[in-house]
Amino acid sequence: MKTLVLISCVKTKLHRSAKAEELYTSDLFRKSYQYAMSLNPDMIFILSAKYGLLPPEKIIEPYEMTLNSMKAADRKIWSATILENLKKYADPNKDKFIFLCGSKYREYLLHGICHYEIPMVGLRNGQQKKWLKEKLKHGYM
Image (cartoon, rainbow, N blue to C red; front, top):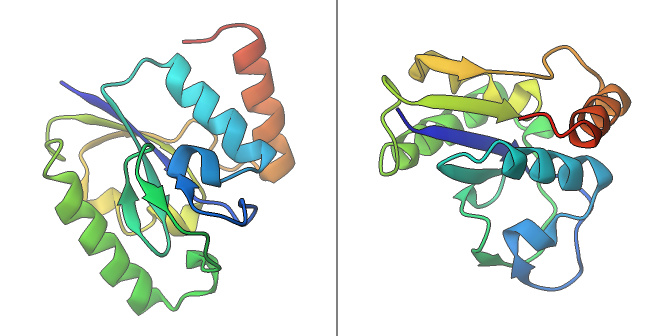
């Protein structure tokens, strides 16, 4: 069984093209990425509203787009594309997925994945940062 971590994109970005893992600069993203790395997963992907499923090393341009302002029908289409792309790397019926992202980024993905964890479910932005800080401080794996 593979383990994949999925992190959502964030609004705060560099103003130039960069690797996806470097483009997103918010404290929440940085801590989420560090936490994802500490889990030693088989793969980490960033869920981008514009670019879809992003490997961290993929170079992309900055953009202004979020699923939070998209209509449900558009989020369903986006999610279907993400699920199809995930199948290139993992088996949604057998592998484990860890979601480090808000509900709009995972809501239509969960029905297509059998084994998943949402460690920060129900936590608001500030609470997520605090949770991540504690996990990173104690070297939680």
